[in-house]
Length: 498
Ligand code: 6YU
Image (tube, rainbow, N blue to C red):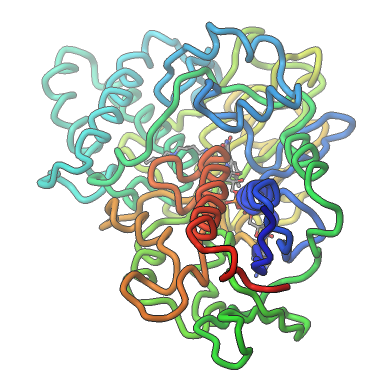
């Protein structure tokens, strides 16, 4: 049947598109997406470095298996390499850490021996797994993952590394610093001292070895968009304020006010703006304001920055089988993941590079990863300054004073006014309840007003797949389903006339 309720979706990222898809398919005939920018996709954004495709935002399908909706869609649209489709790839359980072949380089110049690194790597991965086990337990020994890892490494090193010489021991501690920086990127956090130990285990992984989109992640967006009625999205239309519990427009409980002054009445709004945007603009975006419990959750959940710096070389300085390059600063045995002087040494936060594979497709392109306030500072520099810093870094770690990048290109997610960072992590003091609060529609349960006026989707509203594309898709579907089941319990005579 056809449903005439007026639905406005704010944001044309993957969660907004997914919600629209489901609603249109279920017969909702008055669905509109308002998007602030001139494009669809949000944090799924494919760009170019020369003639090569690079991902400015989301990179991988995390856990490409049958249960993963992004995997199913990508397969349906034939966007994946054959290897990603094999049952072996789908069954691999990597627990969030792909088994990449690493190369380690030291700040005194040159490759480090993998055997010297391995014990520190193992200890770190063990501790990460243990960090996940405090979820729902209460009584965790530290409030943040950073403190837990540091104190445990100290203790375990006393016992397990007591017979090794001081230099080797110091190098292992420097490796721990490097791995903390990796985790800052994975979690989208400034420091692992800002990630809650008690809530770290909320994030769940799916089986499957992470894969990429050979033609670009945006191919998924293009395919999904072509399945939506044309004209459903209005671009360059930022929403300024959602007036809910609205008594001005008769019959319509919500009124959406756009930046250009246009006011659009609606029965339901699905808000998919990123958590970073919500943190910054919640007080003007909602009228009346968000209820206190919801606001506290917006504030408690973390939303940091993770950026990429793509660097192209004429020839590789890494091994042919290398998939990730880690840069170990040999003066960082204090297990730190923040640099003391951001302006002078922000580049020390860059943990290293992933190698774009296969070489036949990409040539010699590396993707550098940098999180945190250091990454936000990097965004303020000119491309030339970034290039200079990366060149010096690579020269130092390779010990080769002539190695020179051909091209450099970086993302700037913190200064993107519609995102204000990269993705969500459980900040200190967070619990499951905060994600429940994030997804709770307005008005809250128990209110006498019209239900389901404002619904919330987007990666930050998924209870265990926050920070991912598959999480975002599932939240769009969830909120569409909420409306579909609401209207399937309403008698046809009660449906609004168009
Ligand atoms: C994934 C990956 N990946 C790297 C980087 C980034 C992200 N993610 P959107 O923002 O897309 O849409 C909102 C729209 O709203 C947008 O278009 C705005 O313009 C619009 N808008 C805002 N304000 C508005 C207004 N006022 N009016 C109108 N419109 C407005 N995910 O699966 N694989 O490899 C990565 C990565 C650099 C930045 C990623 C990855 C995250 C995804 O990109 C992201 O979740 C979704 O695209 C979001 O879609 P959306 O619709 O919600 O919002 C404990 C523990 C934790 C461990 N976590 C580990 C997980 C690993 C996370 N992986 C990330 C890694 C990378 C590298």
